Length: 131
Image (cartoon, rainbow, N blue to C red):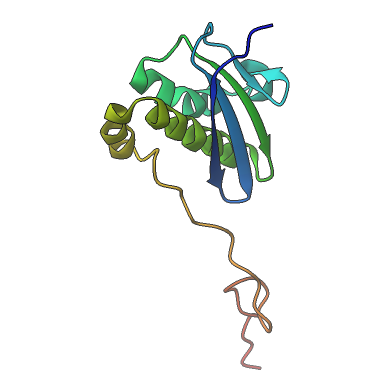
């Protein structure tokens, strides 16, 4: 059995963390947590988010094995997009400018703000009653 060469990267968004193993040779198959892309993300919007860096790099001949956990479905798809973009740049540095202009290289650091004492949520104060 021959050893496959792969590139391992990690992408994050909110509480979602995605690990991507990208093999240099393959048939363009994307496997997420043991399921195909269409099975894991039934909506085309989420599928397009995942496939955006692949379309920019014209890298349809590589296989991707992805493990993703935490967060919601959209955050998971954006974490996968971040990890795939990082893997593409590891493979070919010339793609870095194109990935950066589309915003795939920068980790979106926005997270849910913690609840503060005396408030109902992070910033929502109790309703004021004059009488």
